[in-house]
Amino acid sequence: MASALAGGGRVVFLTGAGVSAESGVPTFRGADGYWTVGSRVYRPQELATRAAFQTMPDEVWRWYLFRRTACRGAEPNPAHRALVDAERELGDRFLLVTQNVDGLHLRAGSSLGRTYQIHGNIDFMRCAGAHEGELVPIPPEVPAVQQEDPFPEEARALLVCPRCTGRTRPHVLWFDEYYDEALYRFESSLVAAAGASVLVTAGTAGATNLPNQMVAAALRAGALLVDINPDESPFARAAEDAGGLWLRGPASVELPRVARAVAAAIRAG
Ligand code: NAD
Image (tube, rainbow, N blue to C red; front, top):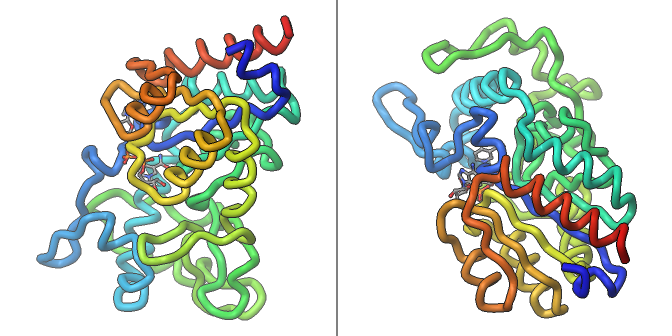
């Protein structure tokens, strides 16, 4: 760790759904893996799409409001808190890139400036029409939605663009959409990975595009790769193949250990 950090580059933490699993937010491979609309069963890969929103916007909103209800009922766990401590210690040498849309990193205290939410944030919406660059917090009056609840009609007048009163959509990157810089920090994340001294991946299956590009960029640049995941993944294998580490424990245990080790090495160096 100390020799990897000697170059002075950043420590980039890349988190996935596994980091929030211990807060009770299901991963896509867990219990949240399906959703029923009428007589049809949809997987997230079918529902979390622009195509689904175009044909059944109320159903897609209903699913997101249900997921948001679960996220808002969850609390940050020691993994989230370890990253708050790491940011405090490392300052500008710290960057957090998260695939999680649950907002738990920000609620734990990570700063918006050093947290790239590359798949969006379920607490925000944006115009589905012309003003899609402007993020709007979901109004607090929007009710909680449980799994069996219908679309809440009282939310209809709240889920609108403040500029044009048109329909809004959740601020999340859907499976049939592309990353960009303005909404999702695409280029910034790649630049950060390519300049990192250490890349720590935690709780991610390694199945999404930008994280894969980040790991490849960091490895090309000679960064130390550390993967945290109880199960094997492409990132675990990549770390081991490149002389890095695969830590086979839960994020709530391993992330605090890694964050402490990084902080100690930087203090000593
Ligand atoms: P994933 O569901 O594909 O994989 C989760 C990974 O976490 C698995 O590899 C699993 O082995 C690991 N894991 C489970 N429990 C863990 C723990 N306690 N500690 C460490 N690792 C653990 O998640 P992904 O790779 O993030 O990709 C799924 C996509 O789904 C992303 O686009 C993400 O935005 C979205 N998603 C987000 C949330 C959230 O915001 N919390 C939840 C579900 C899905």
